[in-house]
Image (cartoon, rainbow, N blue to C red; front, top):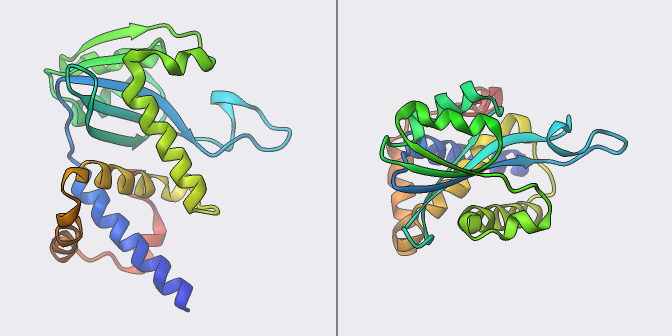
Amino acid sequence: MRYKCAWLMKHKLLQVMAEREENRQLAGRVEIDDAYLGGALPGGKRGRGSENKVSFIAAVQTTETGHPVLVCLKKLVFTKEALAQWARKSLCASAQVISDGLACFTGVTTVGASHERTVTGGGAASVKLQQFHAVNTLLSNLKTSFSGTYHAFDFDKYGQRYLAEVQYRFNRRFDLSAILARLTRAAALTAPHPEHLIRAAEVGG
């Protein structure tokens, strides 16, 4: 019972964070990359096609010199249509998007954003490219945090909420002394989510 109450409270707070970040828009210089929660099952397919991986986009707004400012994390499939839909909600028309050569990333231009593609070829060398430093650092820290904090969670069902927590904390990291008060206020203003809704499906799934 104690675990159930703690789990429910955790997910109610994640829901609050998700709703507060739902309409986040990025502008200016934005690095994006495809990313995945989970890993290959024993004997299963590896890489982007693994049946045990849940895909999401990581987007980091930076200064002109590449310092991270804001982040947007969204679980989605990597098709041009899905990227276009994400871009319409999460990118300003003034964004200058920088990505690797994944074909679907061209969908970001549907909102008028400019797009610079770099074919990286994959491998260890690709994560060291300076133009992707902010997003690669974010993803490395995110995966380390998840593996060190959680034994396991349902990536497919609850992945967006856990990503929203990272996004919420990251985007408020410049004023950590106020983050608890802001979350408390947001929780008080957010519409109630009873347990059956919390368990039914994730936000934006």
